[in-house]
Picture 1 (cartoon, rainbow, N blue to C red):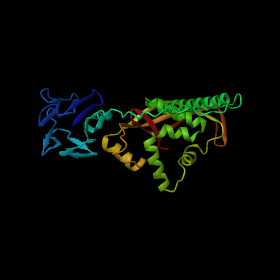
Picture 2: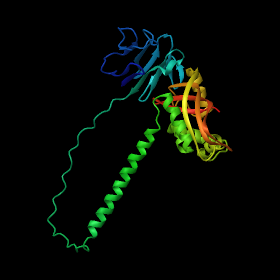
Picture 3: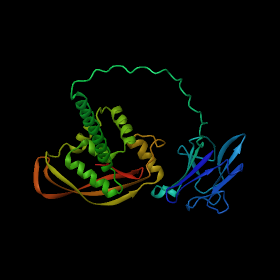
Picture 4: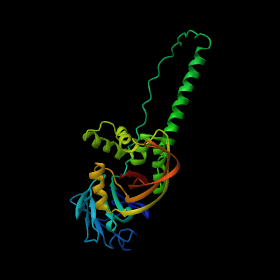
Length: 310
């Protein structure tokens, strides 16, 4: 059995429990622990991984912040391939945590030499009638064009998809404003959801009677704006930082996803300022008008997304 320790600040380390030659392996911040962790919210002796009746277990040793399995606080759980244990910072500040991910090491299968096929007697090659002149060259050209088109399409798909990923909160709001200007519901959805959350949120909306998520975005966010307008992100101010329990409530109640499937790392509420001009509803203005919007900004897999709140 192996355990990979993932610290969102200090990096990743992997340990082979069987190779350590112990039935009980301690982990924590103390220097004499078998697995030493650096984060300050990990207790000095935090827990122990031990063998009992031929199976591995992990147990908390009266630590300050405890440990979580499947988003439930636990004292002792059995360890199998794929078990994940997390230790969260106090209030889950800035999404900080240490994760213990257990897995069975990969075992190389034994080499099996290939079986030599029996030698067949030589056979005279069949007579192939020549194709009409130029036909083979034409097929080759067509195939080359098709392959090149598919390759270009795949590259453009991934480039455009990557282009909507925001590494900062400000970038997320800039992408949101750009999609608003283009009145593009699909790109707007890319700024609001990662794929895993989008698919589950779409199921939630369908359960509430909305058959098409892009149509919902058109109705709620784009209807009422004119055919031609511009929207630019100006600035933002954070109004609230969410703790771990509040993030789980947002995942479950607002997005309709299972917190065990999709992990939101960080979340804040913001007041965002946007400049708009052009046709806004029935009015047209050549001067910029400043509008405020409250929104939730949340991080999944180190990328930020915007969930508008008005």
